[in-house]
Image 1 (cartoon, rainbow, N blue to C red):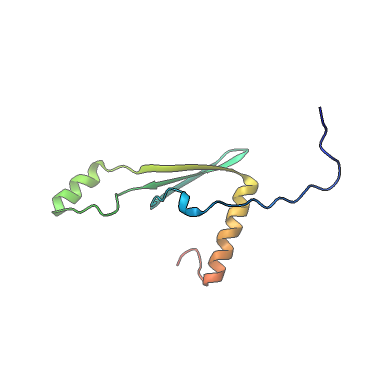
Image 2: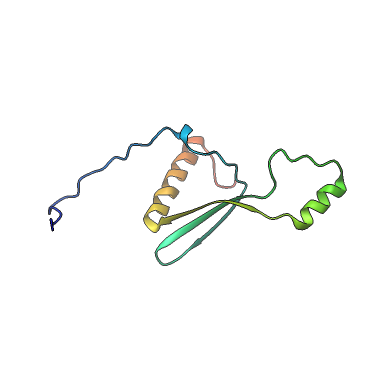
Length: 101
């Protein structure tokens, strides 16, 4: 069996496909937890976008039983989590925003 070459790792720059090929989902609810080895992000939608209620009672009835619809669960290493936080911070700094804006 071949052994990996010794020395410095070879830098890799992944090529991304067009983002138009990805499904688009709208999330307005988020959950996060972590284990010893990874961080788990869960994205969901609490109320379908574009849902129209005809009365206050319909709203109240819906909210009594409404549940978050899970959309995606994303698992990453702690290193990936730190990289994601760095990207988000850079984007917020570029826009002059703080996490509470």
